[in-house]
Length: 512
Image (cartoon, rainbow, N blue to C red; front, side, top):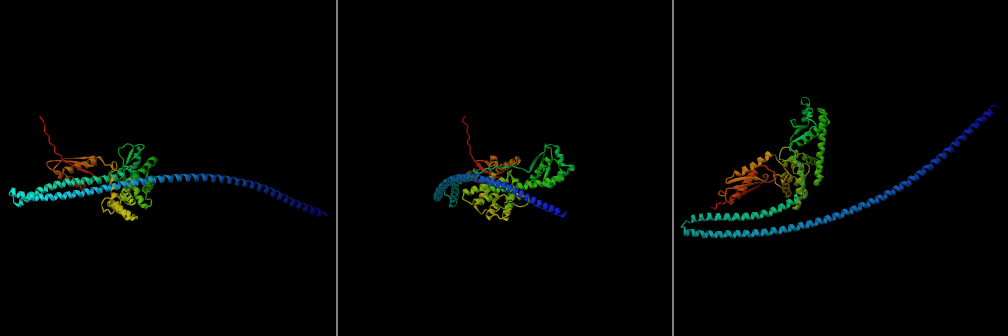
């Protein structure tokens, strides 16, 4: 009997437990339903916000597209106007060339007429010679051989004088026409190009915060300065210059690496061999980066981005190379632009001329490592890295080591001379300047019949005054050529030197 209540209690407990579980499940289900409704509301709000944002972005994109379209149309209208202006300018240039061509043809006809007059004059002289010979035989009772010699002497003298006058007149006219055309072409090219020239030397000065820093740079028993010189390959000059130390080296890249490393060491203050090697390595990396960037910039400015990386690296090295004080990196870019402009004026291959101008001094970038003329060395390097044969010849011939094979080779040589000879491009020391002027005057006064010689225009012209009783008009022409030839054979100078010979006769009398 006692078991039945226990069983009833157990059953009731199980039933209560089941009812509790069912009630808990229903409560959880209601909570889940409430959470689902809230999530649905949030999702609906997010979708509405996203749609509003999409509409706003769409409106902004349409506005931007409209603005870009308006800018493109404005740019196209500007380009059309620019093309129209260029076409008008080209037509004017063509008309000018046709006019000059007609003028040249007229001058050629005039020269032909003058040549005919010279031939006619020569025939008249021959007839006069025969008449003079007969007169001499009749009047002077001279032998025919003696009369012939006298006649030939007089006729030769007259013919020389007449021929000298004609040659001088023809040469003056031709030179005037050629010089005028050359000046026009060169001036049109130069006036469209200008660049700054950076002048450097073989030494670099590094400022110091105080003179006691010199002792730290030298180090104990000179170990620091020896370490710097050994790692960089330069010479450090520690003298009485206040708060400065001098870096000396003929290799400009090494000098720049040493300058950067020494500047960082001085700024940091920790100077010892291990630190020196680390800073020099960093400075070398920085200079290499500058060289690469300079090569890329030169290629970009001249329009040759596809050049071999090694060639671009050599062009960048020219940034640290100078000649007569002229920075060779900017000289190469300037020569490239000049050669291109000259080629455009003369209807040549502009791209070949510009590439030849950019690469013409490539050999100077390795002049410390490779023996031989820089033009030949540069041509070999260019050939090795796939530069066209035409441009290789331009590089090799710009200093006449080999014969030029194209118009562009001559134009690049001319552009090189223009870039180096224009005022302010190059500089030289006072001592070398005085020596060059003295050498010019000594060469001129070394000829017989020269009274005085003066080097003027900073050595770009020599004026020679001759003794009028010792030389005639024909002799001074020969003298000017002889002096010019001797100057070319014995002196080195940038650009060209004009030789002017002056012969004058003065008569002085006093009225008493």
